[in-house]
Image (cartoon, rainbow, N blue to C red; front, side, top):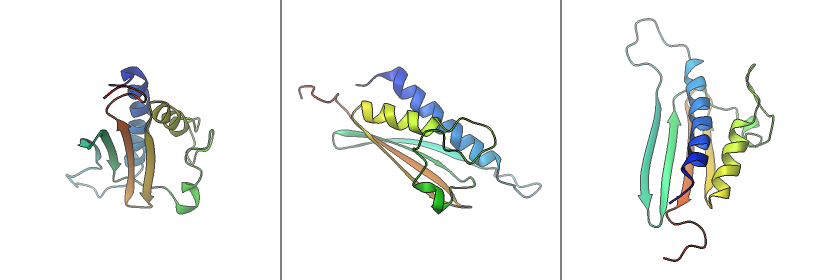
Length: 122
């Protein structure tokens, strides 16, 4: 149970970043397997885990500490608010969000949400 509209907003922000990351990766002409964005959901005990992975450009190690800072961006366009907004929403729903990335290999965002709202009876 969660606020579906708020969760949708967070996921749209994260998926939009992933889509843009894979679009920047040059692929050899004629390569049939293009870049990928994957969304996976699973249950882990009393939590729902959502993982969004891409095989895009990745994030530089020097930038990782700043990805949740408002207005921080490495792109020419964009506001730098997508991940900070997503983090605020996820934490407001009682969850957590973690980003792992490696340049030229891609990025993985893991969202961990309680299956029941914080403070709800079991």
